[in-house]
Image (cartoon, rainbow, N blue to C red; front, side, top):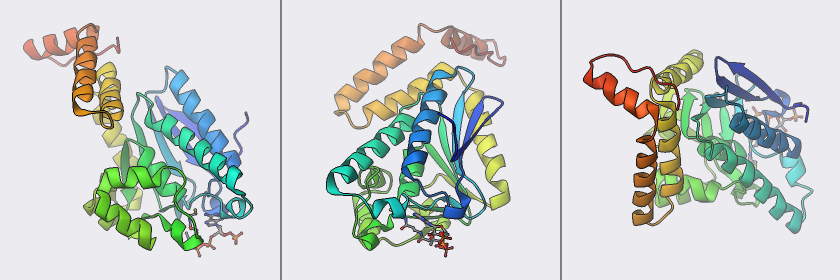
Length: 260
Ligand code: COA
C-alpha cells in the first residue's frame, strides 16, 4: 500500500508517523485509518524501529477527528464496521511492545483524542486542544474513547467531557491526567526526543515487557495481572540484558544492553 495521507520517517530508530491532511486538519478518513493500520504493522515487524511517534502535519492540528464528510453517509451496519476497524488499528498501536508517543501539536478532537489516548504517553504543545465533541454531531465516540477516557481521567471527569463535548486546553488536560506533559510548541519535538532518550538508556526487552504487563494486566483480574507480571519478570531473568544490567550496577559501571 502506498502512503498518501501519512508521512513515515525513521529517525535513528524512531518511526515518526505524521498524519498528513493539513487542509482537513488531518481528519481521519477511511483511507488514513487503513494507512495507520499498515504503519502499525510495519512498526511491529521492523526490528530497526525502537519506538513510534504519532503526530499531525502543520501547526494547527494533531487530528481534528474522524472525517465528518464520510460519517455523514454511513448506515448503521457500515458505522459499526467503521468503528470496529478504527478500534482495531488503534489497539494495534497500543499493543506494540515498543513505546508509542503522541506528539500532540494542536487540535486532538474526537478520533484525534482517541488516537492520542491509544498511545502509551502523550506530550502536548501548549496550543493543543482535546475533546470528544461527538455528542454535538448526534454521535458517540467510535474509536474506544468511551473506554480509554475514563481509564485515564476517571469515570466522573470522562462523563462530564463526553456529555458536554467541551474542549479541554492543554493545561487542563495535563492537570486531569489526559496528557503527561505540556511544553511550548517549539519544544515539542525536543521533549519527545528527551523522553525517548531516557527510555532508550534502559534494557529494551524490559521496556517491552513493562508495556505488556500494563497493557494486558490492567484489565485482567488483579491476581491474573500479578501472575502475568511474575511470568514476564521470570522471562527477563532469562535475558542477557538482566545479567548485564545487574552486573553493571554491582561493578559501578554503565550497562551495555543488547536487547536479548
Ligand atoms: N472532518 C472533516 N473535515 C474536517 C474536520 C473533520 N473532523 N475537521 C476540520 N475539517 C475541515 C473543515 O471542514 C475545513 O475544510 P474546508 O476548508 O474544505 O471547509 C478545514 O478542515 C479547516 O477547518 P475549519 O473548521 O475551517 O477550521 P477552524 O479553525 O475554523 O476550526 C475546528 C477548527 C477543529 C474547531 C473545527 O474544524 C471543528 O470543529 N472540526 C470538527 C471537530 C469534530 O467535531 N471532530 C470530531 C469528529 S467525530
